[in-house]
Image (spheres, rainbow, N blue to C red):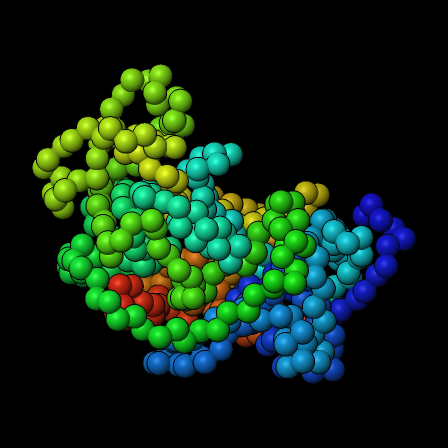
Length: 428
C-alpha cells in the first residue's frame, strides 16, 4: 500500500457501498454480531435503506427505498461505523483497503457492493445522459425543463418508467426488441401496456409514498465527488416520485416508439449540417406512415440502424450498466465475468480469500436454477446483500449455509404505467 503511515481502522467485517446491497449486508452483519464493529465505506453522503419490507409470498417481496443520512443507520445500529470516502485501492493480500481520504481499513472479511455505472451509448458527448443515481436524475429533470423533444435509448426499467412519466415533451423511444419491456413481461402484456402508453394519460397522480432525503448543505461537496468520477448508488423503486418531469410544451405526453433498431451514429448540430442528411419530424400517427422532413434545428441528431434520423434536445442512454469494479482490480487477481462483474460462487464469495461481492458489481457464476437468472434489479440487490451477510457470518464461525430460496426462482414486483407488475420466470 502506498500510505504505510496512514491512520488505520479495523473491523472484523468491512462492506463497501452505500446502496441497497451494501446497506442490507451491513445491517444483517450488525444483527449477527452486535458486539463487533461493522465498517461501511461509501463515497456518498447518503445511504439507501430498505423500508416497509413485505414478504408477499415465498418468492415475491415488496419494499420501499429511502435515501437517508448515514447517521440514521448508525443510530439504528450502534456497531455500524460509516466511513464517507471513495475507495482508492484494495490490497487483498494484506486484507487492507485504502480510501481516498488517506486512511487504511483492515478487514477479516470484506463484501464489495459498489454497484454499477450507466453504460453510455456514447462517452464524452454532452448531449448524452445516463440516469443512475439521484444526482443524474436531478440533472435530467433540469435539462427536461428546457426540452421540446428527447430521445430515450434502451428497453429496461429506467426507460419504461421515463417514457410514461415525462410530460410536455415529445419522446422518441428507440428499442432493439420487437416489443417494450421484454425483460419484464411477454408480448401480450407489452401490447396492452403500449396501448396505455400512447393513450392520453389520466390527470390524477398517485400520491408520493416514498420520502427523499436531500443533501442541500453538501451540494458543493457532492458535486466535487461527482466530477472526480464517483457514482452514487442506484436509484430505487419509484425514483421519479418527487421529480417534476415536464418539458416546455403544454400537452400531457407524446410518445413514438421505434422498434428493432439501435443507434447508428450521433451528430452534433454542425456535423449534421455538413452531412446534408435530413431528419424527420415527430410522427403524427403511431404507425409512422406519414414521413415528413423536419425543418427545425436541434442541438443533437440520432441516426438509427433503420436509417431514420431524429433531432432532439438531448439523449437518455438507458442501455444497461457496467459493474463498478475499477477501484478493486489493480493488483488483485479477481475472476471477472464477461459482463465485467466480479464472479461469485453460490455463497457470494469471489475468487479471492475472504472477499465477497453482492448487488450490481457481481456476476453470479454458479450453476443457476433453470428458473432463475441474474438481473441487476433492486430486489436482487437486497437479496444478495442479505445472503452475502449470512454467508460471511457462517464462514466466520466455521459453519456452512444453504443457498437462499430467492435464488431458486426469479421473482420481481415493480410498477410500470401505474400497473403493478409481478415478473416470474422471464427468459426461459
